[in-house]
Length: 300
Image (cartoon, rainbow, N blue to C red; front, side, top):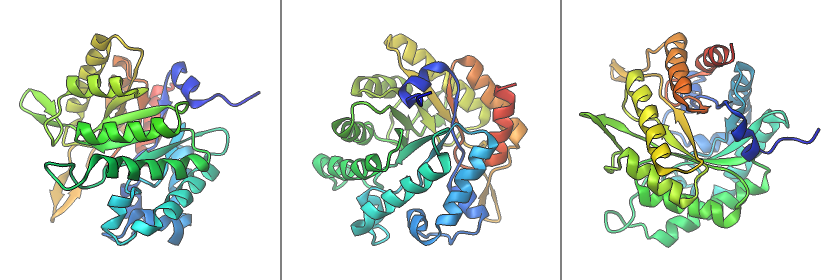
């Protein structure tokens, strides 16, 4: 039997993503402040262990360790010139772990800078950086793309355009980070849910949603419902994705600690799924135990 393409698989219901990469790197005592993408070359065994732990927990797909893999983000570590090899190594590690029975989503994160006139980046420069990253990841046989933790509409649209210019066939999942501000949810750059959905769907995203942000589990459930309402109002056949943190972190001796248990995380995930979200994973603070409990609850 031929393998089901990810774009077709997304139409068949629940797709469970993995949890946080950074949380697992901290648990494995990766050096703080070090470029996570450099570990694809220097400590590939650690990255492979993390992928395998999520797959064993029940994830259908793993994300490449390339969140900070665009050249502008890597430049902060003096690694701009090594963008291609770092992204290629990450994709190979994820592909080897996933095999042909699971999927690999190439992870695209923000540049860490701002576009003009707020910052110094020019649109064509940023689109080019994303396009370079996309081409390398495509060459390693990934199944789709996920754009994460974006806060500015202009930047995430440039990332979608870069992907679409290189591949119109693979699915694009587009996610932004929202905070709860009074009765509303907005990104750091002031983007609300309706604006995000309208813009991302218009840009050609196959799925839209949220990850990270400063929210409680109840907030994430509410946010998921607002995304679903906005997508339905748009009238397009677009899926919604949710990658909540393991709740809101608490500062313990100056360190952010996530205290949400796997059971609590899974209960929230079940409510998000029952509301109509079919692509679910975890972000900061979530680990294999959270994903395993979520998988057991959703597939019971």
